[in-house]
Image (cartoon, rainbow, N blue to C red; front, side, top):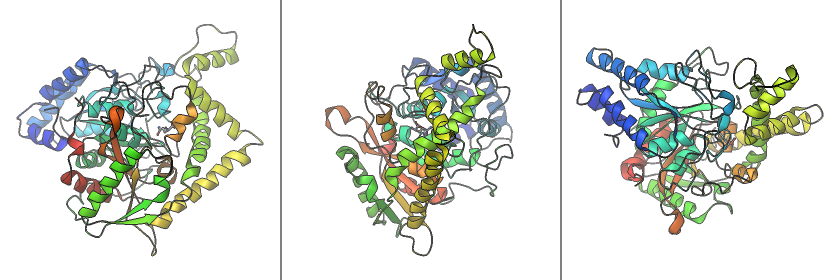
Length: 488
Ligand code: GLN
């Protein structure tokens, strides 16, 4: 049962072959037996109450495709009744009085919440080692990181502890853990998924999305989680669409842009080989490969690591020990209370970002760093538009690696923040441009250590081209079985 896709599970639920309560129980048992540290909060009673409500809907005439489907939420989406920590000590005992829009949407669709998933503190990280509640282990190799910041989401789906999970991506946090755990994830066009109730990291970049086993399942989840929300000032007003409407289209004539900057010196040879083999598979499916250039790719690291901390330093000012969150026990006066509460509540990486962000926004440095970064951000977006847009466009989609290496060992990069930042080289530019991007499993590393560590293929498209991306991924998943491989 835990091996089935959402589509298959949905059929079983609709035909009453299995009840939502039975299904939820199976997954709760698997979660209880697991040692990955993927879940931060599990509450059988809450889950089973929701499952019974779903069963009532399934018995009546009120069920949709996701009714009764178990799902787990990244602990960055606030949830009524469940604690929401964002992986931080700051929010250790925080229970939100309302649900995030995404959670509301899934509840309305009748999904059953299995629990809240571990993540890097305030979604800052690439290995899920920045969680106050300890790292998540990669189910393929428990000595390796699962990727971050949505490491709990990717590990839970890979280990079949949940058939699907929500996640968020600010600079790669859906695609990179999906890649390192061998599952499928998509970050849609910025503005598609409401940020209301998604604890803010960098608001101009943060975007929610799903992680699941297949592209088709991701489409089903996107159908539920997208849509205009007046409570999010950057929410897009667009007609509802069926993200799976293009599944089945032929890839004959599809032009795949292969950016030379994604295959440079920093790319591990085993990752390159798996990605090139996937590209060859697409050629067999009728696509043609086109060499393209995204010349500003390299600049995405300094640009992102100015803009994201700048926005984070502003967003995280709300954690002051007064309104909510951790408050120091002893303090002299108000300023001392702020200082001690924040010093105790935030972890090292979060403090580092607040310091960098405050610095680049301060008088005298704003023009030199922040404004400059914004200008280059526009040029990075322009690189993509030159390839994907207009009468001279070169390709329909862009493909390359997600991560320059397979998952690294736990502890390997914890002393070196810059090493972590460099691992984001292939995901940041898409986020800065606001474009949709996905990761699908396409192979494994090589050598004794890496042979069991998955490789992900990144597929990037133009704004609002999610339906095409999902079909491109779907056709690959019809022709190959990487997405069905499971950790031992
Ligand atoms: N690894 C990047 C960072 O640390 C991206 C994180 C994310 O997408 N949330 O900021």
